[in-house]
Image (cartoon, rainbow, N blue to C red; front, side, top):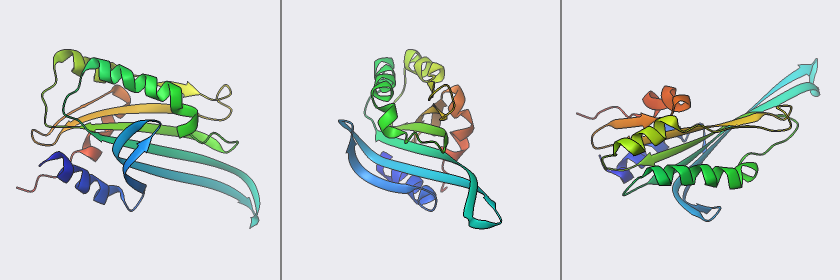
Length: 168
């Protein structure tokens, strides 16, 4: 399965739950796909007009087809997040948590240093001491041809979500 076919299948899988954009430029970076999910939970008192509490959980997926990958590129993603996190995440009084997921896809073999950089990647930031929520980042590399997948610790549970069923 090629990178483009993989992206089509992933987007089909997610389109029911995510707002999808394709071939976009965000914060001076090009991405083949951007997906956004928002979940708002509300508690009411008797009627919907009387909200007593509400909170939001969000996820943002940045998808990029790549021809090569290095540990320097992974470190560049950290810089990208540091510079743009407050523009990516809509921090409000109702914001509870956000997850930013970077999916890097390519038919390439990774060297040990790059695999280690992916596995060790960690990003967490709280807003206003956690009173306005926090953000965590998942890092996922997938080779759709060999079905290899590498993630950071926080993204480990997403291995199954991003691994498509074989059509054989």
